[in-house]
Length: 96
Image (tube, rainbow, N blue to C red; front, side, top):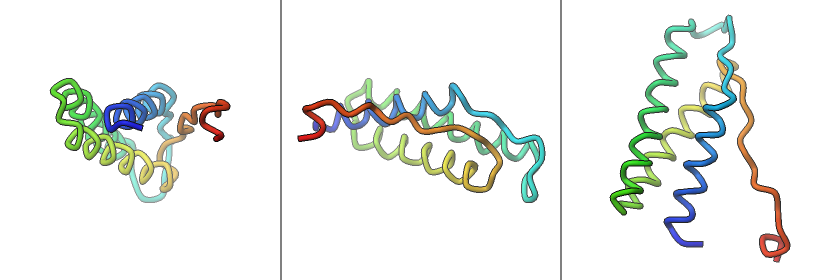
């Protein structure tokens, strides 16, 4: 898989997460404004990833989307948001 395809796949996955993200009303460690602040940072990293992909700076793009996913995963693991990562259905080519 090319670096461009990898970056595009990760960006699509993060976009999917943002499309379905639900912020928990109450969490033990965080209030909603803190959760929104972290989610906004994650969204900014996603926008950076798309910008750098367009500029063909694919290593920077991949790093940016990885930061985005890390922040989203941290929020999810803390129970502050709910979403599912998009998993592309396997095709015969993917299974080989």
